[in-house]
Image 1: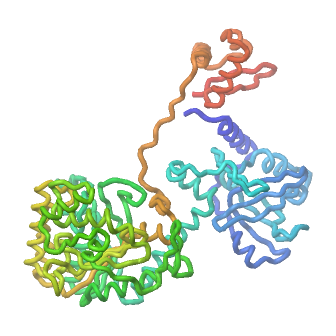
Image 2 (image 1 turned 60 degrees about the vertical axis):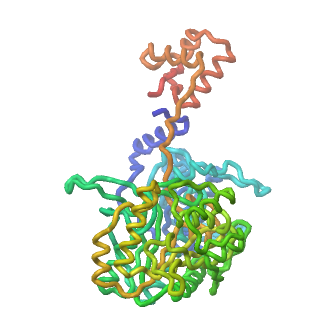
Image 3 (image 1 turned 135 degrees about the horizontal axis):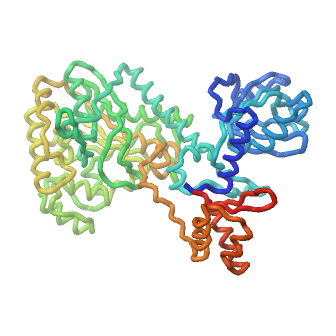
Length: 566
């Protein structure tokens, strides 16, 4: 691995620390008793404090320095005076360890007392300094000039997602997003617990991928010698628990769908599903809007949220529009009673890409997605979906062609999906068989396997039940004004990192070959003579080789030696 010049220097400092008898990675506890936030909230002149964190800036003033320490909750200013830190004659701790061997990004422990500077800044006068962890790579440190312009910002999206640990360190707003994510989960969990519902866990590895229309990830269980599927949904297991006698169960589930990736889809995502006995989808609509209002306030302190150019208000109640009325409103086409062929032709006539593998449900879904979905900015319930779109949903009490289902739309995207759950085992079997026919036709999202155990559970009897599923990642996007799902996942799925290939010029290759022939090192003057390059080409070649971390120059007595870095 080729090291940069700075990485080489930091490794040399690491050794220097060890030579001084300082362990750069000590094992013992450091007795932190304050955070930067606690200091600022209860500042008391002369108070003794012990803090720890990363060193983020230093302003050298000779026998003293002003520095900035960053911990998990913010930054605090340090004042490091040589004679305060080193009371005796030995000033090594200040002159060598702090000033020469400590780099920005290093973790340090500080003991000192609080005071206010002449300009009114809260500060720690350092009288104890402990090395906690040496960083071997320099942090990208954005700088803000006098005009407020940011330089050297760490804002490349791919690098930020790939190196989230760096992103969290240098971009403090990112950390706030994930703190809000935890607040969302806590708010939702509290709402359900207060209602008396039970949080449960169900299998991630399933013998049949059920509960949704999606393509699964497949693996193999060696001991049982059977294929297993990463769950696409936890619905069927939660319903089994309702059969078993629980009145309300919920789960925050990691789901996996082997499908495309974009700004709103990640192959691994978090869903929340809740099932409540003796309820229907009308009750669930009221429950959902109250839940989301509660969560919005829990996350942001208000029911309002900004997403891009839109101001969204999660305050209940929300508008309710039927699927049929929505399509009719935006396209003029009435889907009621239409055959598959009629829907196919209508979709094609609207310029929507469709194919022969699509059944009625998929065709209606494509029409709605293309022509209607994006128009709903404020939270809106789309209700009463055609039967073909909802294989696990109860038939509508007033229209046998429809189901008692709703989806909640926010900013043109689905956030929640809910049913009056189908609990008729005979009807359920027929719906599963319809799905199998679609799978045989070529629809790769249709479930081609009937879950016989689930049908058996229904035959033992499931009470009237309403279920709700919420995409937690997508809801988080809307509550934190992030247009990309990758921004609300600590570690989004990424393509494998490309190995960096270094293209060398012919001159640079020649210098490398000369070094290899001389056991990877050579006197600088001799190497220059052997290379026989013009001054300009020599300087450019040596500069590039050093920049790529392929060579370094070491001083050996009075001579300089060029070494090839392996």
